[in-house]
Length: 149
Ligand SMILES: CC(C)(COP(=O)(O)OP(=O)(O)OC[C@H]1O[C@@H](n2cnc3c(N)ncnc32)[C@H](O)[C@@H]1OP(=O)(O)O)[C@@H](O)C(=O)NCCC(=O)NCCS
Image 1 (cartoon, rainbow, N blue to C red):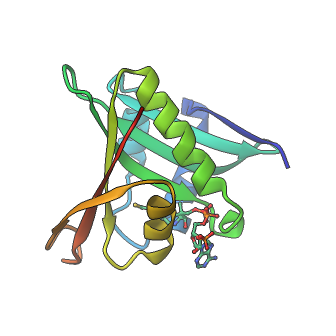
Image 2 (tube, rainbow, N blue to C red):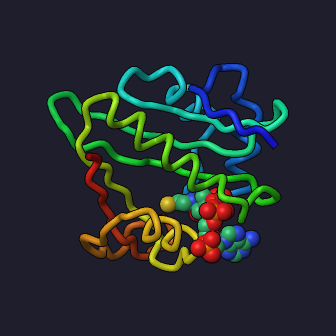
């Protein structure tokens, strides 16, 4: 199936809410946060669609004067997982960040999130640190970074 990756629009809000519910057990973005993030000039909010259906998102944050971009969120609909969509969204996020002048992309991932850690490691991310007590439930995060040549 053809996958199209493009910036999120306000009309995507319902589908993005459904994706938050389906992909994350906690630490979800609220409808208000999603809406704000779609409109924010300091964020890149990408969505992946197959046959018009929203299958995933990637959210990239930029700070003025900094060449470090941050991957705030990456998610794929559970029924679409395991087909490489996450990798394609990650690649699109990296290209987006590079086009905005970033020279590296950093992210935090739950230390127990095997699927995501596999994806990041396979995609060339290097582990920098562990941050204890990072998530709502007290779980630790691992920080990863990748240079964007
Ligand atoms: C992490 C995530 C974006 C990966 O997306 P994806 O489209 O499934 O990515 P891929 O198909 O490239 O698979 C990545 C790895 O996930 C694992 N995986 C994929 N589908 C899986 C499934 N149904 N069950 C368990 N593991 C699975 C595989 O180990 C795979 O690595 P491999 O191909 O080297 O074996 C997706 O699992 C997701 O949205 N998870 C919930 C939200 C989340 O945790 N986001 C990351 C926050 S930092």
